[in-house]
Length: 249
Image 1 (cartoon, helix red, strand yellow):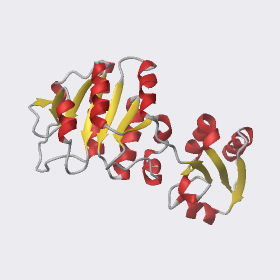
Image 2 (cartoon, rainbow, N blue to C red; image 1 turned 180 degrees about the vertical axis):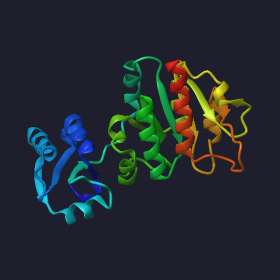
Image 3 (cartoon, one colour; image 1 turned 135 degrees about the vertical axis):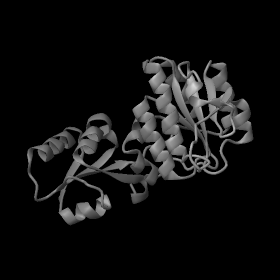
Image 4 (cartoon, rainbow, N blue to C red; image 1 turned 60 degrees about the vertical axis):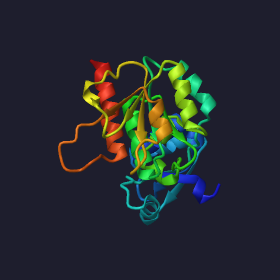
């Protein structure tokens, strides 16, 4: 497998979780050669149990592979996650615990934004993140690194026709809430407890016309300062956690 098809995850917690929950995707584990403490021994045991090769490498080698990240003497090379098919979405919704919560990104092209959205989606209990195949970044190495493992826990579904997918979600009883700065309704005054898909626009242009037209409602985030909008990953975090807050109360 070439370097472009794998990424490094670092740190004891992250590598342990990868071996425990997705060991089949772990290609190799590196441990610092001068450390032999209990925690590294645990990682080595988990790797051997999963049939994953363990290499002892120098601290300099770990530092270079980790690209400056705090690795704690542990690094694992893992396969890049792959996007799920649109046909998987029905089964995901059928097995959702409680009212589904989805995140839809309409043309996000910055891998850092996608990674941050995946990480927040995992934390907020999102069942799937949906994005179009065209003019969207996809699961790149950078996006997966920023996601800190969430690219494996949150199904990332790429669809060929986002407008058609939105129509299908509405037919399943999913309420589509889009964000737009000019919307009359405020996020915090909107009921987000029903089966819901939050629809966020891409950097700069926001929601495309066909996407906007298929939303049941548009909402805005309160902006009290001088900037006109928030970064899409920040806005997604605000929206997801407002939905979560409402569902927990």
